[in-house]
Image 1 (cartoon, rainbow, N blue to C red):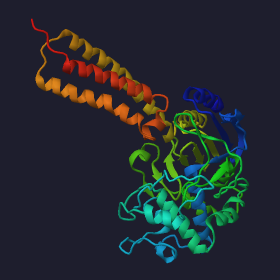
Image 2 (cartoon, one colour; image 1 turned 60 degrees about the horizontal axis):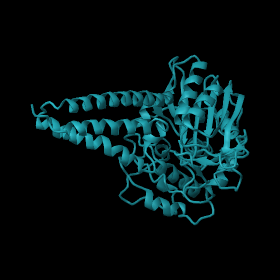
Image 3 (spheres, rainbow, N blue to C red; image 1 turned 180 degrees about the vertical axis):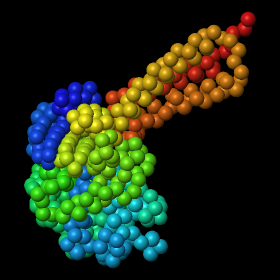
Image 4 (cartoon, rainbow, N blue to C red; image 1 turned 90 degrees about the vertical axis):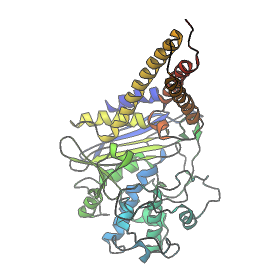
Length: 432
C-alpha cells in the first residue's frame, strides 16, 4: 500500500522520481523505483540510481566518529582543539567537544547550506570554508542548534585526528565494511538521478566545500544496508551494540521547527517515541534538487528509506510515512505532520476567499466606516498583497518545501483577500 500512496502523491505533487526500500526484521522486503531519473531525457528511475543523500550524511558521519572513539583514537568528550592542527576557532571560543558536535549542542550556527559548486569547479578548501562559515550562537552544551557547520568541523577533526582524508577514512572503516558499495563522500563521475528544484527544473549534480554534513552520494540500497546495520542484533563489525545504542540515545530535546517532528536528538540521529512506546530513530535530508529520509525502529528491525530527485518531495514523504506508520500499528510518526501544513493552508485559503467576499460586499454597501478601520484595513491589505509577491521572488523558503503545490494558491487567495480589504479601505462612502 505504501508504494501506491507514493505513486498517487508523486503525480499530485509533481515529483519526478524516487526509490523506496522497506525493511522488516532487519531485511529488505520490498524495493520500488518509481517515475523518472531524468525528465529531460525520459530516463526511468532504477533501484540502483545514485542520489545526493544530503543530511543522511550526518548519521553516517556519526558512525565514523564513533568508530574512532570505540577504537581509542578519539575522545568524544575532550576539546576538539586537542586534535585540530590546520584550523581552530578563535581563542575566545569556549571549549567544544566531539559529542557536542554530534548532538548539535556545540552552539554553532547552521552555516551556509547554499555554498554549492560544480564538481570540476574550483571551490574553497574545508579550512577556508570553515574560517568564513564558523559562528557561535550559544554556549556549548546548553541547547540544540542544528548545524551543518558543526558536522563539517567534525570532518576536519576526523582528518586531523587520523592524518587521513575524510572520504578515504569513511570508505575504509564504515562504508565498505557495511556493504555500501556505491556510496562515497567523494565525487566519482558516476551517472546520477538528475535533481529537480521546487519549480520542477533540472538541477545538475554539485558538491559542497564540506562533506561531513551533506556530502554523501549513495543508492537507496546503500542507505538500506546502513539502516539494517543500525538495527538491534545486526550482523556488523564496525560498531559494538553499545556504541550503536549510544548513537540512538537522545541527549537533548529538539526545539524549533524540528520539535514538530522529533522528540530528541542523539548522536547523529533524531529520536521519537512511537504511540506504542517503542523508540524510533531517523534522519532526513533536503538539498537543492534532492531529498532523502530514513526512519527506523531498532527494536523490531522495521525501517523505510526514501530517496527522491525532487525538492518538492516532503509532502510525498509525509504521506508515505503516515501509511508506513499504519502498517506498524502505530500513530503517524512525527514527520507525517508535514501534512498538517497542507490542511492549515487549505483552511487559510477558504477563510481568505470568504473574507474577500465579505469585504467586497461591505465596500459595495458604501456604509460609513471609521477612519481607524479604513487605515487598518489598508495596512493589512498591503501586507496580504505584498508577501506573495516577495515570496515568489525568493529562491527558497521553507514554505515552498512543505507546500510545493499549495503555496501558490495560498498566495493568490491572500492577494484576493488583500484586494477585498483594499477596496473596503479605499472605496468612498456613499452619500445618502
